[in-house]
Length: 335
Image (cartoon, rainbow, N blue to C red; front, side):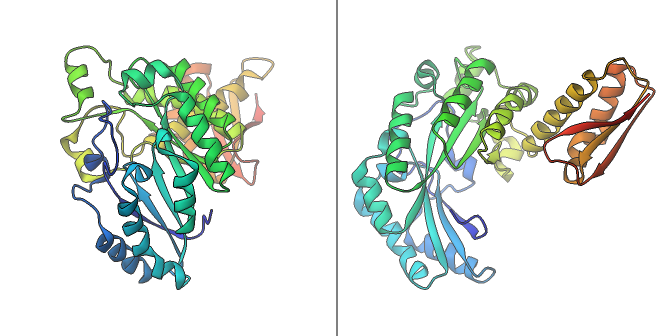
């Protein structure tokens, strides 16, 4: 992958997707309600050329490898002049696990596609069935193996809070995905979108909304699992759009800064663990944290520090930041 290259997203909502997943309306998720053709690809790359020296083209949404081969070629060929000029460093596509074959990957490679993102969503077959995904967990494992065998980079996407799921099942999914050794993951807590089948299930009382609070609590151990495996988390929560921030997200775990909430909750948990290692209940505590994580430890409006003071009955709680090890919270001193 080329992480330093500017990513140029081209959203292809529902392109090639044979299924109507209960949670899905990619037009609302992406903010792109119209079909995408070669002119949109060229327009996006021309705009990127005006502000960047190099870029990576990303076809997001839909199931790229499930569309007819001719349509795939048309979209990919639109990018070839930019690839030949050296501006385009690579291309990535998103697709379904059950729409991956050795032959389809060979076609992608011939056009310079280096990364494949698979929408695994869950590694629990009951959850996949209840969500109308149309594939099984075994398809994700098989497709991941094919992507790696083809010498391509693998990104996996998962969701939390789907129908029939639970925090335990979501963590098991994270563990199963980590075992497939992707080079990155995206975590999308379930949002109830207007007009979807999931909204109808929710209205009928057949689905309990995955709240922001529940999503934060569920995602903290998931983040820990991927961090421990050295797998980068590329995205946590849906990318904010005007539609989602308006009235299209009718329930569930939509928050424009969901990732920050999760990482802040994670640092709160790290601080709790550090304080609990002390041999006696202190009155005053100093916490040490890397300067880049100061805001995550303190929380919005210092909410984490207030929670720690109340929980442990502290008279004083201070934080010192510096070049301390990242992803840790240590005790600097206590009385």
